[in-house]
Length: 411
Ligand SMILES: *[C@@H]1O[C@H](CO)[C@@H](O)[C@H](O)[C@H]1NC(C)=O
Ligand SMILES: *[C@@H]1O[C@H](CO)[C@@H](O)[C@H](O)[C@H]1NC(C)=O
Image (tube, rainbow, N blue to C red):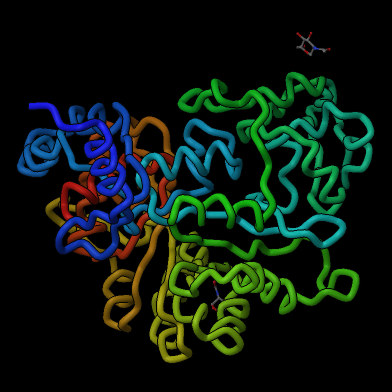
């Protein structure tokens, strides 16, 4: 039966404007039509047979929606140039409820999104623009096969102004150490990534990132990157840098509950806890001490002290959260047990950063490598992280894979 067109479009309009809440899931956002694409299905298909595979297969038709369990690590850099508008948009489309901007600053102290203050030579086209290339801390030096020295360059955001930064094009992160010219040097994209979207990625200021993510109704995780210039920088202290990140949210009225500020420098975290307690409640203490066996022990024994000092969330790389028991089962590590015992929440990084898993998976799978031999094994590890370690969220280079799992499990 036909309805009057006016009525039906009015009904439709109202229906689409009204927020739709999935029952029982406080973490989900309703603004975006989430699309996961074929990759999660490929990974599920590749899993070893068993109950987890059957469960994940049972979720094939969704529904899929944004979840705060998924943090878009630098956006979606498995396929998009990291920390670009395009990368953030892809992350939002793939259900990341929280999207990351690594925050560093330009010569004129403007906050911008880059993984490192000094990665412009591998993440942008700066070396191809002569008037900017010559401003690099260390301009390009070709490899010298006779001497056996690699190609090198060091270009930092602090070498250029914001206007110059905005003139750059972002590319996939990578470089070729044997290169004898800039073109060859820039062509270092690993084979499991792609240059398909590396046409001229849009670099972002921290404020532009906030506007974009706010427009999606999503949440923020800015990381104060350790400056690679001596601080204070022209009279600007580390504390002022940490404060300026928070000010960018306060100035546009973003509620602290939508912001997870992170740092590897524990003093940044303590600064936020003390001076911006609402933001400090969600501050994330990133942990890279776990990279060495001594550091791992050190870190594990310090977790209780962190908690006592007001830290609520710690974030080591996910390899540190799991290990193998004597029956070769993946189980929570001593670090995980100590963190939970101290009452700390855990956020971890970074899923989908390892490429192919057929040779043990590399860095992120180092403590469980004996049982990692196909791409589907990433979900076996994620299942332990989610259900046994009880992580609160996982950064991913391809948010869809984590969103698929999280939606399936009701996280
Ligand atoms: C750069 O070096 C590669 C490899 O030697 C060479 O094929 C290419 O023509 C060079 N490009 C330029 C612009 O000189
Ligand atoms: C252990 O932790 C302390 C305090 O954070 C630090 O100063 C020291 O360098 C750490 N040692 C190792 C081996 O990581």
